[in-house]
Image 1 (tube, rainbow, N blue to C red):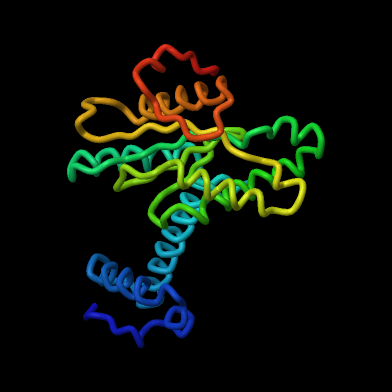
Image 2 (image 1 turned 90 degrees about the vertical axis):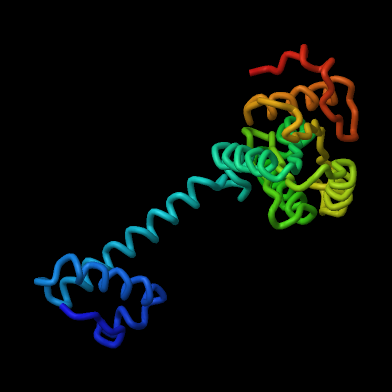
Length: 231
């Protein structure tokens, strides 16, 4: 079969938002299966494009926490690994903030879990308003979140101050929530360390801040290596 033209496809395919992809798929298939009719080639092309779009949607849904809209734990760790690899290549920095919604248990006890879920959504939205578009936030689990910031080092204090201002402006009772934050900064000079080990350090700084009831971000230091993080 000779080279196809877009206008040879059915109107349904021509009007599809995937028309250029369907056309490219049909053309590629026509070279592999010259004996097949145009209708058959087009049907195969549409199936392949539909499956690709479906797979992409499934991956996007799997990468997102359904309640808060933050990235899933798997997706945020993938982002951390990519950020660390980029920092190694370019000599940049990566900053990780490990944080929770301070006082959420008491909040749930007083107002109920449905209201607590709404508080989690407001918390994530508040963070998204104050990080750059290429920074990421993921849900680690429960009320714990990880913020990944690249091209640092950056001021964690400023971000947490801005988040606090946003939360305080919410309607009651959501304006009661706050954050406890542990921070770790990464650069290639730190040597061999995994994403999991890096997050563990941020977690240790977080538990140090929590234990000392510190409201400002606490950055990991070597003496914190002995802090046992609850499973």
